Length: 303
Image 1 (cartoon, rainbow, N blue to C red):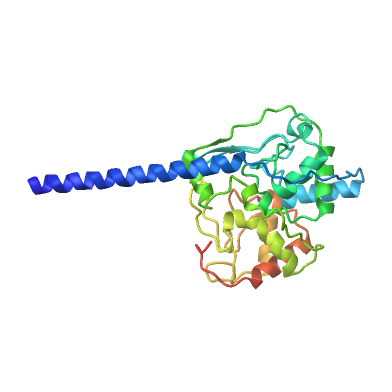
Image 2 (cartoon, rainbow, N blue to C red):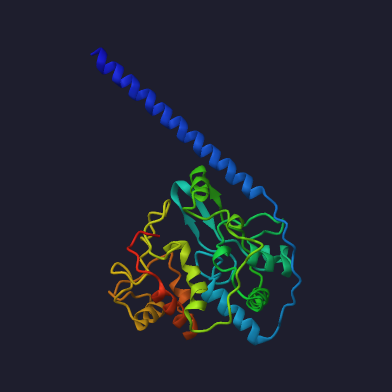
């Protein structure tokens, strides 16, 4: 009996040490996250000139709606007045804010919006939260001007911003690279690569493929990210592997973008912004396909 009691005592001590160490690690990571989010980046606000040209505004609408995609229901919504609240369970809640002139659109100058889209920085020079600027800041200067011109053309919508709560677990997952909440830390502010002119090439497709990395992983081989909301499906493999798109054709990809239907007839689910991606033009589709076919085959889960 004494031996059992001693074993149980040592097990209890070991568990206490593990729990204490885990709590200390989580506290240290949360502190690092908070410190990073309080950092002010020394990035100047550019001077830009907006356009009232309908063609430029339409280009801005296309980029904002189809590529970024700002108007998705899980981002800023169709009227840009705020999206649905995403419940990450114990990680927290995330809501895209109202960016119309009745809210944040009024608070930011044109130059500050341009800096936000390029560097992921708020008006005060600190990092934005969760907005995946690091996946789309390769946009050419003329496209950024077009996007801001489009946003400025939208009417004001009087709507309060939804909740944004982030727990210690969410901060730890951000620091571990599993989820991205601290955006500016992920951007090399002195070395931002800008995309070439749109063309149906793998070179341009590489930038478009970057829009998919937040869900499908850096290597686009899918798998379930740490902290992924339970209501969201596992992101699939997009590489030409047996577990991915090996048997797909360009027509299969284009049909999926248009209808949301995979090759096997299943409908893609949120957070895939299928209502936005169906707006991709043929150049963008061909470019993305060329890039995906150029990837090394990687089994599902390699992220």
